[in-house]
Image (cartoon, rainbow, N blue to C red):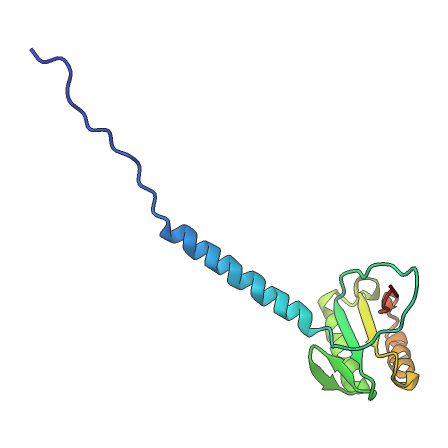
Amino acid sequence: MRLSKHRRKTLAEMNMTPMIDIVFLLIIFFMTVTQISEINKELMELPKLKGSEDQERSSLTINITRDGDIVVSGNTTTTIRLLAIVSEELAKVNDDPGRLNIVVRADERGDCRVVNEVMNALGKLQLVKVRLAVQVPE
C-alpha cells in the first residue's frame, strides 16, 4: 500500500506586466502635473524682499511682464478679460472671495501702473487673498 503521494510543489508565478503598466502611468501623470504647474510661472525677475513667507498654493496666478502684458496660464490677456477669468474662478468657489487665493507676479523692472490697475480691478471684486510674489535675496 502506498501512503505518500508524490506531489509537485508549484511556485506561484507573478505577472509583472500590470505593475509595469501602472508605474509607467504614474510617471506620465507626474511629468504632466509638473509641466502644468510650471506653465503658470513666467520667467521674470521678481522684486527682492527679505523675510517673506513661502508662497501658499494659489487658485490663480497672474503674471505681469516687464512690458506691462498681463499673462494668465500662458495666455496674454487684458484687464477686462482678467476680470472675467477671476469671476469664473469665483463661481467655482460659490462666489466666496475668501476662498480664492490669487498670486500676482510682477517683473521688478516693469512699470507699476499695470500692477496698480490689476490690484484695483481685483479690489472691485472684493478679493481678500491677493498676494504679491517676491524673491528672497541670497
